Image (cartoon, rainbow, N blue to C red; front, side):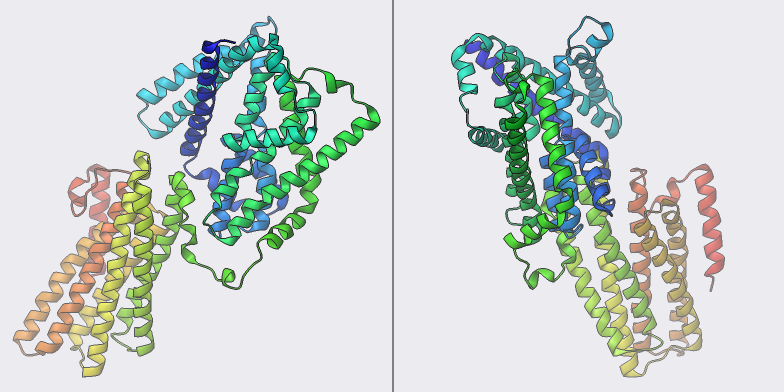
Length: 584
């Protein structure tokens, strides 16, 4: 093998690893966070968790990626360690799919259909379709599909390049001697572990082994402990990901270590004892690409089946290694804002959306509670509004900081829109909470000074309160439920409330001129009317941000002018309906 062969091998390895990365990234983006939602929600039983871990890993083709994701879930308090163990077990089964895909390169035969199954036949077609989708796709889904196809094609080209580069080494005794020098199975296990620890992907490590197998230098006796070691080495990635995380996340990261070590020990003991008794004839046979895939699958399935009944033992070992502290039992609502999720924007956005929904309901409830203080003041309720306002400010700071970090990631157009909409919505919900505090202060002033609105003033403010409560409920519920239809009812109601605000101010001015209202009370009413009006404006903003996710042309405060046809008719119908409902 000359220098050009070495260069070809290096290029093939680079293409192989890059193709695996591109394909996995494309699948993650195309999933839009759905894979992560499945992991989060469908782990009600241990068997389901195993099947889910296997299924998701088979799709993203990386047990390390699945395990790192699980570490993030445990760190965020989304799932428990007991649920994580099942997913980790399944992930080790799912990771074997890559080896079987790569084994397609070893298909032989003159049949047309057999030739079609070879990657060298269909990879060029996938690459061409992928590049067309990537360059001409008008939506993110088509571009992501193109990225997946290109990634798979590049991966296969890399595999073929590596195989072609090392094939001449079959006739070099020195090379085959290096590969088979580890006669001791334990040394082979260590070698496999180190190889995967460096590459940080058991799928890639086994793929390299499959490429080298074309030299004919590997026997089943030499390759079995090597593959076992490669699976152990895959534990390095989740261990690294757990640095700087919660103790719960560290436990989730250490579970794969115990799982692989115990599984490897049991597998090797059982296998070599059986070999001693039955003297397996295949041990000295040459291991090919398919044979390596069989061993890889056999080890992982064996380990999962044998250790499945002992899930509790793995959990106890994790807790014995990293004991639980008293402080650890305290929960933190912001744990879901884990930096690990930044690499999966769709899921990170959903985590933020959940927190903003909590913030939205707190702000809404706080403002409604503040308005009730005008008729029945309670210092206890007023203090609760202050507490909520401080809490909402904390939500604002923490979520905004996280979304700002997320916005610096490589976001798709839709994810970028969602991030921007959330950032704007947070500001509006925080301002609603501020107005709740303003109303509570006005209510306290009225209570302490003994102020009371005139009969007409009470009627107008009661109707105004009813309208503002309505729009606030519509905007909040539309946001929490992601209900576009409900969001579309907010703008016409906001227009009615704007007219109502002007009418209340005009009537108030008339009462001042006639001496039916004092200047001091008039100032309080003016402040309240302004707070009500601002809350209506913020509610309308939130609804507009939601509609912009469907139609980026929708602009704030110009929605009515942009409607055409049936939409305009519906807007006018709602405008008339709300106008009749909240007429003074």
